[in-house]
Length: 356
Image (cartoon, rainbow, N blue to C red):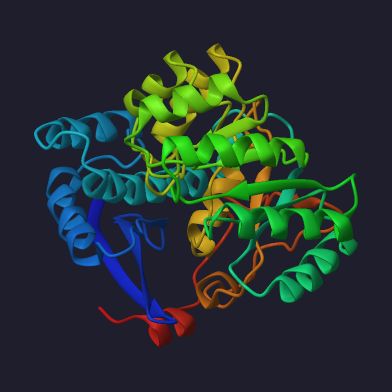
């Protein structure tokens, strides 16, 4: 079996672009899908996919580790470049989709399944909205059985604290409340806010400071009993190694469509396990392709903490597939058992959203 083509498909919905990678083989009907979405870098990622394609067309798609290393060697010339890393991730996901289909097994079984048929999930994310609207959403999510909710913060210390306190009142003490600042604070501000969030029983403080601020993460992780989480912007195990060695994160959140695909995130998770650090995969605004890949990876993870279910509407999550992904129920989501990623894209939806 040989790779005959690597295609980048750009789709647009709600004024935002997603990049999908399709790897085609010479076996009739056998192809794989991956996702390589990186906000505001669409053309760069597409160009990187096309560059990497030149290295692997004509190769055996089941030699995934070899192909990853070959693409990575080309990547080394450009340092820790998240654009090329994202492109590599999309190709790698598609290769594992092919391998699973060729073997007639879901990817989590090919990875050596941990045996999960469902994953524990939390609802993400309560966005910047008037407090009254946030309370209605939070109450509704708790009533649906989600054991945890995540709130976006970064509007200032008092505004963030007010929302946390009010949400806690409506969801009660049994539902975990997590916060995500998306790097909104400097170290001093994050420390002040973190101490007060801790007093409110917040479970984790995600991306409190910029990802380049390793010293800030280290200081916060040492000063706070509340867990510090992050890592969605990082590519490869070497980036995560720095956080883990410095004990700068209590929970890591690799994004499979950025951090190197299945081949690399399994190594990142293994590295984290050596430091006794759990994994909570980042899905964010991913489409159904990256979410499906994340579910398969999470099902093989012994150190899985929880899985992020993004509940705000996303057409490329709800409408892209021929058969939709399972919906969470009672705080759990089913792991698809069909071969590969367990999905197939709808040709009609792909044509409707595709721009190039």
